[in-house]
Length: 124
Image (tube, rainbow, N blue to C red):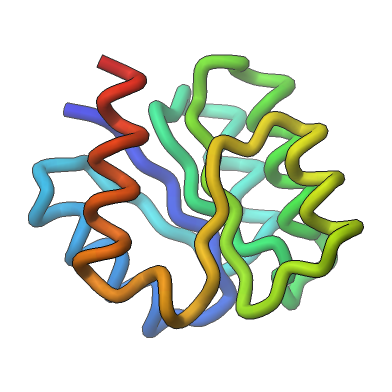
């Protein structure tokens, strides 16, 4: 069973993504704070992480992605945001992000589940 870390500062989005991902048979942990994400990254190797780029905490989404990359080059990382400007997107790509999700449109269940299935097929 693949392990997925969801990092987003909106609890309703985390709850929704957790439910959808668990229905896909995945083991899901979520956190609302970048600081807590760093703690999870230290103690677990993740198959996939879905990270909001614009977290409302001291630790940014880019910092979380960098920590994931430092721990494991094999983790599939998906960046998520309501709006991804060109500079932020370039930095995320430089850190090795596999895909981008735009909120709220791309997290609608059909689009989201298909993207996740496609990305998970790369892990297997």
